[in-house]
Picture (tube, rainbow, N blue to C red):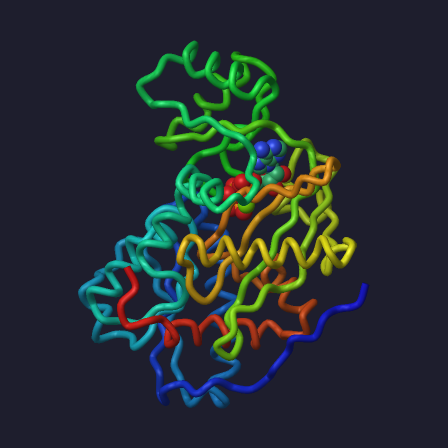
Length: 332
Ligand SMILES: Nc1ncnc2c1ncn2[C@@H]1O[C@H](COP(=O)(O)OP(=O)(O)OP(=O)(O)O)[C@@H](O)[C@H]1O
Ligand SMILES: [Mg+2]
């Protein structure tokens, strides 16, 4: 399959002499991914300083950050912070209050996107397929949780934190004991969701605003011999094989891209996101989740998909930066 060329290298109009803060880190378990996103994005912006109008770039760690000082320090924030505190609306709300424009989604979409249970409720309301699931109540005994999961979904089930990412603390449980083990290991997470286990190929579709037009990028698929697309498969290139554009019939590609756009809009996301799917052999293609601050590293899925669409990494970062200036003046 050949790459679709969406590419435009046209430089968007940006204010001159911008001081850009690339915000990353914090204390979320996804900190390492965030550092990779931020360093790559900052280098890309610095490389483009001339064409972008003499900008300056500062890497800003959320950990221990004096938020009130940000206002005099930067003109715009490029958000490269994943997980709780960075992707869940908190930093977005702070920046709104300080009057600093920032890339990507506003408070509400960020908060919704960080909560897999909420996102799945929205998907159901929009008749978008998603694995059946139960949300255990933190006060319920393990016995109650296991019998609810088993009676509703059967074994095996797939367990993941409601507000997690990077496949951290996620896994397959074949019985009550394994379910208890997974919930115990992930005890730093407050809430989990338990889904029906579906074997299938993980696929993801990046959504990017290009010249004011929300555009789905080519479908990215990943294959692994591991039990599922876990942390190890995501971080060790030898444990996965990526195919982008995915080798899928045109109609399936279009369906996944259209669904990604629908999900992006349904949660009210802005500018950039990545919607994850599972391609089940039965033909089901359920949506797993939306990432409102997708990884921005140079070899990450979003950059790979952008590359398959004819966009260089620098093009991608420029389009992401632009999303800070195309948000409505009030976004909840
Ligand atoms: N219901 C399920 N059945 C089987 N495997 C699943 C299921 N849900 C998730 N997985 C596996 O776990 C992987 C990660 O799932 P998901 O995208 O929901 O989690 P995440 O931790 O938020 O990921 P990300 O790295 O995108 O933040 C999937 O690609 C898939 O391999
Ligand atoms: Mg995912």
